[in-house]
Image (cartoon, rainbow, N blue to C red; front, side, top):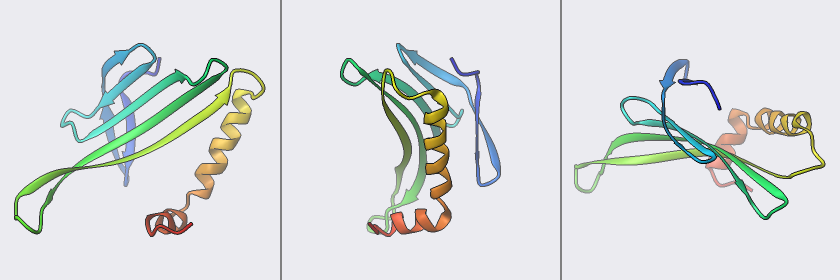
Length: 117
């Protein structure tokens, strides 16, 4: 189990996320104001595969331009590792995750946001 609390730095600001829930192979960490959540989970995808997910959700209060009423919107970013039970080491998984992280530069994220394929 990960240490409690977890820390997530966004735009240079460190956020403390205490563990608020453990359900089987899923744990949830959340900032005290409820606007930032980190979820780690593992599921058996088909008997011989494991699917691991790390997900970060950020909520923001945004004005609705049509009604001038504030609304709560959610942004989620997550990584799923879908692997067989045997055949790939933790090192190999880490190498692939690090390669994806390196590829996700600001220009790549901007292109993805612009729906480039």
